[in-house]
Amino acid sequence: MTGINVKAWINEISADGVTLQQSQNAYIKWADKYDEDLENHAFTGPKKVAQIVRDKLSNQRPENVRILDVAAGTGLVAKELREFGFRHIDALEPSEAMLKEAKKAHLYENYFIEYISQSQTTISENSYDVVTGSGLYANEAHVPCEALYEMIRLVKPGGLIVLCGRNHLLNDSETYKRLEPLMNKLESDQKWKKVSREIWPGYLKGIDGVAWCYQVL
Ligand SMILES: C[S@@+](CC[C@H](N)C(=O)[O-])C[C@H]1O[C@@H](n2cnc3c(N)ncnc32)[C@H](O)[C@@H]1O
Image (cartoon, rainbow, N blue to C red; front, side):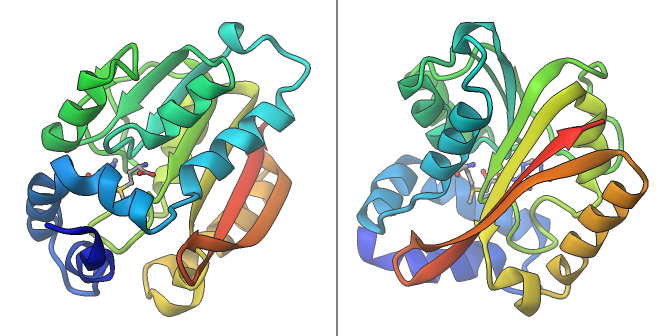
């Protein structure tokens, strides 16, 4: 696998109709080259998420903050959070191959090898100050919109949920057309409130990103 194939890989893991099994098989094959490939394509999602967490929690000591990184992959978000002094970071990720890379670099404290969806994970409610997620939305073989309910359950009242992905998916993906309407519904249901929403160029080369920060109520 070489760095020039990221767009082909994005299609392989996320094109409409790709099954969960196909997507997960692609991550098994990609895991040991994932970081290198995405570095070559100037992937900025993990840094954006970490910067938002740092900025919104500037009044807290990073070593006191407990974070769950969902769809953690090889641990790029934890790498960035660690640069800002965050230490207590757990990973939730179904792909053992991707997590193997994170484990090599000792990026997380605990590893939950599971999917997130609307159903409850094995993790107790109100366990974290922050849930993060970068690149977690790609198609129905990735994190479903309704997993927001579970993220909210896992975060303490007053805590943050900080997520990012490719902006065009909000229009182009039948699955993720429903994401922001659900985010808005959760706000009108007083489950959380929006702190920020940002679109920035260069999520990947030539692709805009969108990042959200919500506070759990
Ligand atoms: C594009 S990678 C993003 C990894 C990392 N967050 C990053 O920014 O580099 C997407 C990850 O989502 C994981 N994934 C897919 N479906 C998931 C689900 N329902 N729950 C949790 N993780 C999931 C995949 O196994 C894959 O590692």
